[in-house]
Image (cartoon, rainbow, N blue to C red; front, top):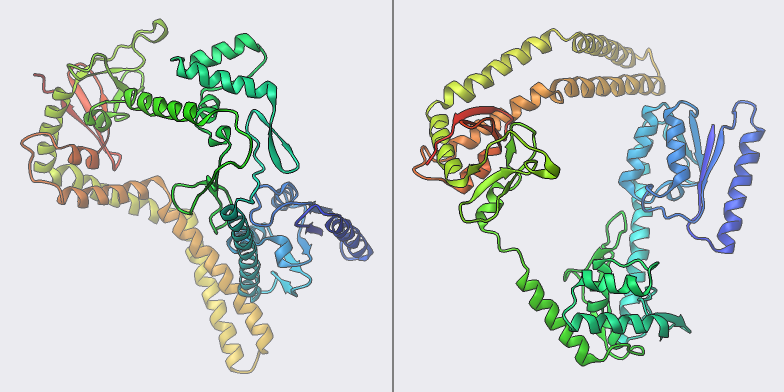
Length: 493
């Protein structure tokens, strides 16, 4: 036996409650002659919205899997989990390990067949309470943002906090001024980092850190609130605000380091440089990026410079003195080859795809019919069904009381459901079945495509082809999205 307890905050009262829970379970489980206490798993000051950060909870699950525990005691459902889906998921996982859970305050025991629905309702209430609390907190914070009374806990470089106010830290503020000045003088972020390292060799700067400073309104004494927000869904995590909720811009919230004119000039230069250095690769580069694969080394192809002849080469060729035996290919050659391949595929669709599909189905049936495990499952299901029918007859003839009847038939139905799930997994989750489903989808998709192509169609190529493998100087291999690989001779200009 084991116990799990958790408290929500690290306040003094909650710490006392935490210690009290540990003492309670030590006394309670220690007094029983029928139970042996394995361990008490206790998470202190950890949120109940997700189990990801609860180390003790996850240690308990691992010990359940290892067979160290067969029963767990918890004060209430809300102590176990406030995410209803996670609650049910872990209860089922623990059941699969042969572990039952008893929630004392709620009077729920997962050993009983009828507890799961009540458990779901209880955990759903705990979840809704958690989300409501999060919403109340978010509303309170937004009201403070609207009035300008909100104080952010994030302190940017160049400032310190005194009496809940941002105060300029002179030594760091001088570096911030240098960063802005150097950028206005034409320095890029890499050059600025080099200059800062020459001044302070131990300092750690990154391009992202420099851009964060250059774009941060805090340095002109203003504050933009709610750059991130927490959606009302579990697990509760901050996300970048891309217009989902309102933002609040408040001027003169603290002492500035940079004047507004300099800051605005820097924003203009940032925008101009971003537009200047924005990748201007043609649309066709996106069509083939990551799709052309080297048949020699397995690496992806890249667009060779210059872009004038639109030639694709292996990324391995010439890398660190290495020589790849692959051949380059131009987009025009690849497109002509694909047109020939597509027309041939449509013309012989029945012989290529349909016959392959039927052969796989036939092979799958033979494998399934000869599967010993499936046969054993079918035999056990038949035996259990007969046993269930027998209990039904006994109950109808008053030869069995209702409690015994429900216990026996409930256990049988549970076992049959497990067996059917296992049988379905054996039939559907193997590679052959996945291949059959992929081929069926490919046949259906191909029927919606044009009967023939006169010239290259990027949409058809994208929907049909997963990869193009350059097999040799004269041949490529088109790997369809269903996994089928077909060769085609290269049509050269």
